[in-house]
Image (cartoon, rainbow, N blue to C red; front, side, top):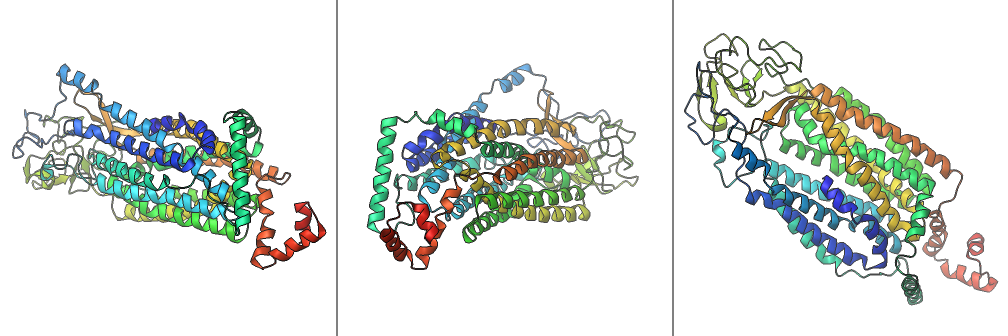
Length: 607
């Protein structure tokens, strides 16, 4: 994600400014084509890499009928970290990451013109009272895309990464296992094709469509003349003359700068919440990656789409002013923020893993002191770092069948059942199956409460999004809109999009209880987290960040009480719109001609 942001940052400010002086739809179309190329490059490593091998005491390619991975005195371990330095060097020198790096940068470059130029294109040629509704539709489309993407990702995550190349029936892991890797590459190929098809319509859109609301030929001709005069002025002045004055004007605009500060703080919070929400659902509620992604898409994104449209309709129906929009955005956001604290009540306990979160007797133990070996498995010659969990019939999970003291097995693949497990019970027929134990009905109920609250919060917060965005657009001059949107995007990406996943990921990793093992004996991905501390970080840090963002929000409300914004001038045109609706436009024009009032404000006063 950071590499994509860097590619976006390379051009965002300049494209936002210079793009308004060029053919904006064509630039957006070119951006879609470039994004398609970036997605295709990101999928290539799958076709060049070897098959994925996960750590396991049970060899997929070996003889599954062998009991050498079970509890046997003086037995042999099937999985051992390799000590062959040539294999380790080969892994380090792999250049597959270059495809991901270059693809992400190219995709970020292609994404650059879409939102800044698209928003300014709508703002320039739409009625002021219709603009919020249109932007609401655009933002809704920006959510529908991720919704479809999450559903696609859920499908891909449920398909094994090397499907078609290996016999999936021999696998000893399921999508709920932290070692599972889904078919990530398939989603990139689909996105590449969709981006390419999406680019086609933009090449046929006009550079300067007629201003919305023009009803007769005279108005259209006059609008075309004004646009030509603007183009001539741009050619005389040059395309770079206004860049620094516009930039200085934006930096000296207190409302605009405070809005950027709010966006940076809140974007830090939301990037963390969105990026790590699948992992949070996995660790807190025991869901698979596929199910977690699917639940996020179903419960969170549709309410956001509805909220965007409703927010736009409210702005259009009631002709909300900029000051009113600022209050709506602030108070709706604050209501959602207070509801957010209910998430701290919807908790589940840590998964009971013997030797990690609980003792072998099932009692709680110090989470950061592993007691892997005990009397029931001391003589089993078990590997102590390999994560290959099994669930015992006593409700406890164990790091491997060997550590559970299991002596025999029945079946192959994921259906394998381990028997005669000395650590599970005293009876000779105590058994276990592959995978962690389920967290139970109470935890599933907490998950439902969490998802319902998340859905409600998403809808309420989305109601504030369009009014808030209109404050951003109307607090700056019309000729500065594209640059203003681009600079806003630049700041949120630099100060939130890049650093947030880095520091938040480091904090999340600090709650890890057991790390996986790579071929060369190095630590791999985290297999199980302390769900309590994970919850405090995942919910607590965004809560603190969002809370601090309301200080500049209240400052904006205070400033708006004392000054008039450039965007408010457009709202005065609603009187003329009402005159058109009631059929009194001609009467108004006749009255204007008879009185020979040249000042437009005086004419509106007489109306």
